[in-house]
Length: 545
Image (cartoon, rainbow, N blue to C red; front, side, top):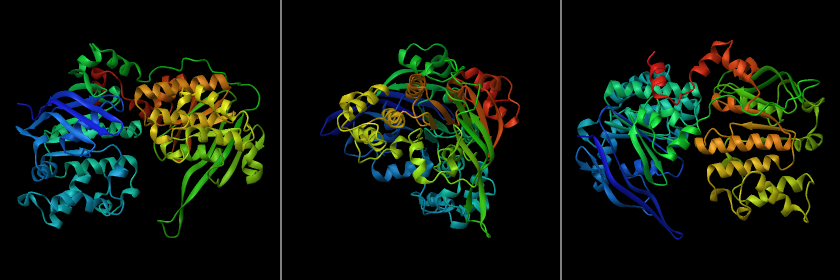
């Protein structure tokens, strides 16, 4: 008998605009020690399905219309509040997608870890504070937190993204659950950290015989971790099979589309870079340091530490490295969005870091940035029309007579329907919001764009669309681009050359395919080795070495 068996689950959302069938007649099962992956794009219903198992959906507007979810023969969907608290405390745990928003920023990591031990719903399982502390430190060590006894009293902001996700895993495992639900636990992580987290989940699962439901939009990520896969689309199950059946014998067009969207292979468009003559951008011995007030006397964080590079006109230069390597700070420093400590930045022979704020304004029109999170970078009080019109009017590139036409052309360029101009950012999907951000970046007809992780949080299918859009716009508008990413597969399919950063310095640079074929540095080899392969047999062979 399966540990969890879901049958005919249907969940509707009711609002003034009508009824949305978020989940429609979904069935699946998972056994102890087994990993089930639920895969699909945003809005497919995969997270809603799993949230319903722990009664985490807002009611209203959500309503479970039909179905059962039997956990050891008990229907989770019919539990009262007391029964559900016991399941949440002891039997079923969840790892959420964003640990920074899931962890309480005002409470230390240790206090959050021991809370379910000292306040357990089942009094027989409660522990004293001292016992709970020892258990928490033991588990922090188990999930790979170095110096766990000292870090017990640290706060979430004092950890990196990968370390926070490890804390979330420890928190989920603290009461030794029998079912672990992982909701996109590696989406925004570096490939090396992602590989570590996936390996950690697999190791802990084997050690504790835990059943795992792994939610993801990326079939490549689940290839080496899942025993079976359910593919969801628009609230329904499109295909369900063992992992090899999904990857090697898929019968559904939607599954084929997800597999085809996984970035792999070399860039298909030829480089337009002008290799002769002076480069467009020349960075010489750039240093950007930030005060570190945690030390006495005050020290400095060397975010960028003596970086020199060139970007040729018409080139897409990929900049890769793990979180904390300094790549985003380098991009912001080039655009004069971060104060530099030393060095120089030349744009067509003009030293930008010597210009005053007033003299820098004309150069702002020539260089723009696409940020990682479009929802955070777009003004929620401005419509799409206002967002796209603002830079045109500010730089005098449009007037009251032709602004409507220019905004419409921008909408066409980035693939947004013109009738959406009066909508606000919250009315769009993540991919559509990124299109708006790209439209704002190209509005001033810049010569240089710095794209900082522009597709890291998007579904693979939307990611593929945005990458195609970027390549088309680079060609159409003769753009030069610095493309920052931790995803080497994405960098490979879009970049002409690649620069690898680690701990604030450049450790390797070269033509994309040459670097892929023969990386010179061990750090680069480790990054390439961590890229997940959409091939279950190869992925399992690699991870067992």
